[in-house]
Length: 159
Image 1 (cartoon, rainbow, N blue to C red):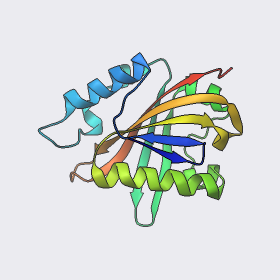
Image 2 (cartoon, rainbow, N blue to C red):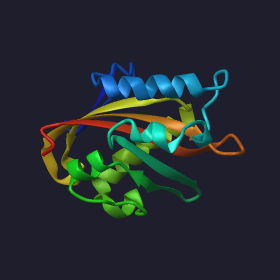
Image 3 (cartoon, one colour):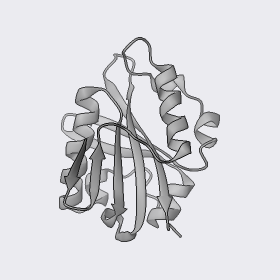
Image 4 (tube, rainbow, N blue to C red):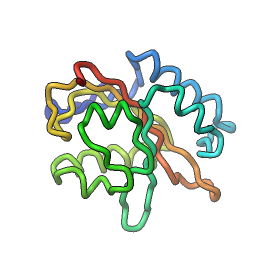
């Protein structure tokens, strides 16, 4: 099922990924799960993330007040969006109209503790001509709560 977000991003609950690299990342996430739980960040190595050719983003989750911070931005992502926002909060980087939509999406990934695919264009980064696909996957902290979000991105016409 696809839920439109006014032509900017759409959510695909079926997670029908088109990108082979994103399929591989989602498979890796699934393999690292313990039972029906969420894998921990420690279940992945830096080398594994590097094998995705700069398509990986890690977001720190701050629950109260709810904020997300870019911990890691892959080089392919920074080239596609035209900036490196490592260390910045999403609510500082994106205009409120985009942040509000992203916040709803990420709250859902956290609350439902499952991956969700998004696709559309990069209007939030002032690049509406760039088509993109992402898979957003929760990662558990030491106490089992969702402490990070692992994102995988792929782009068309990014450069």
